[in-house]
Image 1 (cartoon, protein in one colour):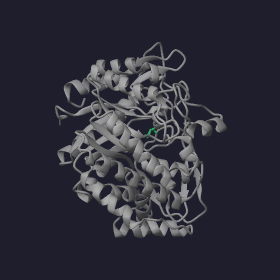
Image 2: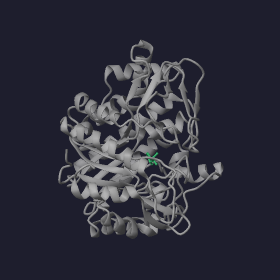
Image 3: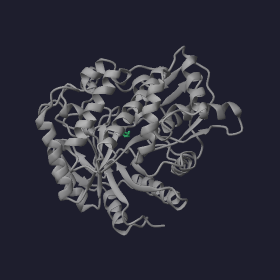
Length: 467
Ligand code: NOJ
């Protein structure tokens, strides 16, 4: 089993997590600035100081065979208020970054929204408000035109599900609201509408590049596969996280099954999802011209039926065994014998990535291409005199790449893989002890050190063979 010659061995980043300089160089405030300040646990400055260090990081890419980079544009660097006046310094900054990418032979894959809505729009309802949808489409149109000669690969949103669940169900992202399934569905629908509108703008202008959306998917298995209630619970969670968004992406509408379950889950809480015919008209058109899916894949879930009180606890410290996810009428996420977990309780279950890739091919045969836009392992790396032995991470990535190749062998068109993350960076709900990078960062000196995984990744990228 070999990787194709043109396979992308990428590294992923996100503006707010790595740039630092969150309130400098004309950048406007975003939803996270105040939220993190209020919490007082950690903040995103200087993070990995990518704002200044990008030439170093891109040189490391070149040296270590990383031939693609996921970068997100910070909306508030371009439009400090989300809409209206532009910030030339921010616009120029990304021109410089893209130029540096080319210089190093690293293909940029650019996301427009990676969790960082400008604060004014956020305070006005974020993507529950149509104003944000309109502002996003204008921002997207601006970027398409401005960077048309430098960017070939675009993504509108990163992880629509993560936004919705963390804002409205788990309460770990701003606004910090919990257990509101209806708002989560509504936010997802609205973001998919914004995605669709942006895709149509891109296609109408006949730009030469490609465009898609990044979804975070997790295969949902019934905890007891012989129990009808668990099968139903797994389906509930699947619709909530996966199928609602996959339908919107590839069909441009929701199947009867999806709608039935989504409406049932919303109505359990007395809520109602609003999906207008004119939204679906736009979404159907966009679904036909989407170029690819970005799939972030980390883990699977085993779900059992649950009708008790809502009870979610997020393990944001790396204290293994502390997380709980029990959502009334939806299901409860269970541990599973024989399946290991990271310190943050993420199941390590690589074969489930194969199941998800095959599922997409079978259920949505019009999918065209898939990039694994994120996969990787949060780990408490030890820094011993500059030698960082992250064998568990290598093992995690190797096993996922193995199933990726298996999926390719089974006919799934996977074009590339981006490890999350290129270098260590700020983690939204965990701060800095959860490291993911190929390159270790000493946050005080901002020096970068290649981990064992970086040397390993380089060999794979050069030989195109999995060791
Ligand atoms: C998903 C997100 O896109 C990224 O921002 C995050 O840090 C990683 N996964 C790890 O949780």
